[in-house]
Image (cartoon, rainbow, N blue to C red):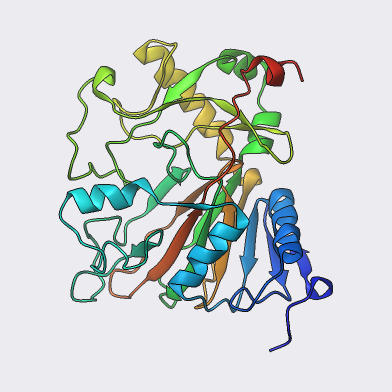
Length: 315
């Protein structure tokens, strides 16, 4: 294969509200700091990147995360290990920092339901919003993918979602915060080590501002995280009814088709990188008769910048 070079990098925008394919870069080979810097520039501009033909060993993915911004170990790893799963099992990778996005059971057979998300549809969400310091981004590398078997992954531009908010909604969220529910996994299932909350006071998880500042672009992005049936994530400053009503309106606005790009033709070796500071994502259901296995790493970012901080609010 041709040796990596800055001049060989090509960017093909999706033509949608976000997303671009990057060609001419093989991340399994040596890359220079200048190449990584260029990749980060493209990422900040397009929010979601697709690189095909990236056949990456797990340790290589960890190394790339370190080069881009630092590796973050996801919260789900700790939850699984608290439930008795060991590194090297079908739920916890033998390489620290790798998440197994899989519908396989302990015998390597695809299933509809597993201890994780299995083959289920995943609603709109932001990775690890339930952590005090959410990751800057995620990188997902396809190892096994079904043939015409679903698992399409959509991404939604939350910078545009904020910029196009009606004035009354912008005013309604000004200065407000959401508690992000840690008790449920991405498919909405209550984690083994948690109990389903019965009131909002029982909802565990950190509090984040509803609008964040992107540290690279300086732009504001709506930050909703994830949402399940009440009681779940809620707006701290509002009553239950007020919170639910406002969240209904915000989620309907933020997930409009005009903000979305979808990866609907996954191939083995595909690498998708998305910016958790600026996008949400979701997944369609997967054919439970077909294997689907992807390796994910999280990239640690700069500290969360609230739009409600005095310096940010003055912009």
